[in-house]
Length: 380
Image (cartoon, rainbow, N blue to C red; front, side):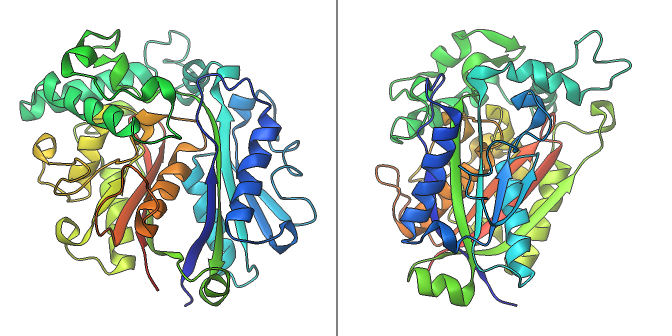
């Protein structure tokens, strides 16, 4: 089977309130991805968008984005999950043999809708939704508290993850300005507003405005477009049960199974030794620790002891991760783009040395109910 390569990408800078037309933002991302590959709009054979009807406040939320999103006079479809799931859809279109260039874009403008209120529709409509006590924020509090108590980890240890990612974001010019802080301390994180005890505001991936796009092509086509594609060598995905009470929140079974599927496809036997870096969609700082353990990058309960700095044992979120900016429907897609930058040596200011293999992930659902994992490799 042909390999599939990432041959172009583009991300619009993230803003808490872009004051910038949404359609212009989509056009900039799509046009930027096409230009980065030296191609024309007519070269696109399939366009996959990632938007959400609840966030956009209308059904068929892609109905007005087809033209600016590169779908005019091309095969066009939509994914209503995370941008990383849209990449899987685009990947399938390429592997079907019916398409030579797949455009994938995703993102939204969270300044225009109440993100956390919209996510209340993920809860049980009979018992949970009417009282609104269980939501994505309180669920994160349950998850973090469960992890702390099971492994005897301190809140300060989780705060260090938030500090690392916000310092990393300060090196990334495309990250959300409000998330960039080169001088942030553990005390700053712990003293920030309580979201759902023990989660504080600075441990949260702030919803923001942003769009990103990338291009996929089969091996022969990819090598005609660029002499330095990034290959998708493995992908895995899994979803856990709907009810939080039926899950062990101290671990991520969906991430573990998604990772196993991706590692098997990529022929990876020992992630600790073979993976050079990871870009996780961590909606909350403690999720980065749980994901690292689920993927076998560190032993269970030892996630906070992993040196995940840019020059550490296994760098995690050198770009700042989702804590560096979380545009709904685009965050996982940006993780893939950031991992691709690292493998191409284009992550100016936060480049991981000698990066050859990377993990990128996306998620949806409360406490990362559904996870998708990509293994990316650089070089021909």
